[in-house]
Image (cartoon, rainbow, N blue to C red; front, side, top):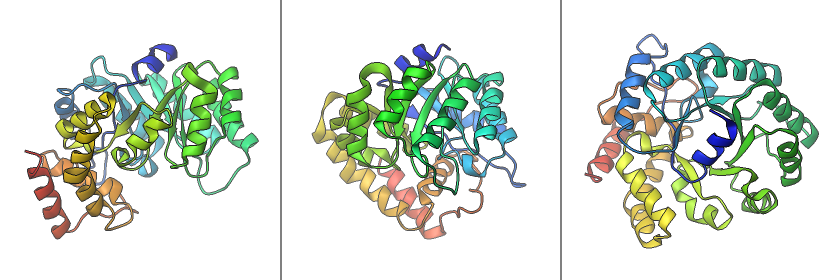
Length: 300
């Protein structure tokens, strides 16, 4: 898929953020993964971001990420497959090439790890990854890899396949500077944990869509919220925030890392063999699973 085509496809639609199932021996479980994606394919989204944050990219080997892309490609149909990509610059470049060979349509470039870096270094990493692949590249502005509007504008001029900016910092000032400065050159994606909690504020900063983790287990609710959000129906958004998203956030906030663990629990409760999360994350306890069950039941 041409990067420019991918940019337009993801500009307004909801993006799915699938979990990565593991089996009893802690290996990537392709069959349950494909079964879950097949179920989700009944619901209309702009694309899949596999092996991302919700997909536990941070715990996957590069080879496993490529396996996830291959499995997603088998069942995704016409939906674009975007894959998490990251780590050090050389690793990210190699992984981007392997994702492309496996049938990926684009990458979400997650931060490098541990060390801080100046803007020049952050830019050099993004530039190198863009040059390593023909796929569209979405920069994930988060953690140690925050990028300024000026840096992003420079990179957009140099790298035709840089197509998107996803923000997970909550820094609305930077988001607004980026969207004003770059306009239609990029697609803009909200990427805060449980982004529906922030979507209306981000809309005011120029971000018309986002990726949804809860789509994994309550796709009807996720699409209802996105439709109301896109239509400016704040009353419906606020009702869903009150009745579902804030109660979900209360479970999510009980333990560090539950932004992923609670999603995986929801997938299991919908009947899919998602397996456990990998260390250093931990799974919900029995009481928290029951809280999730009641929350899901409340959505019909």
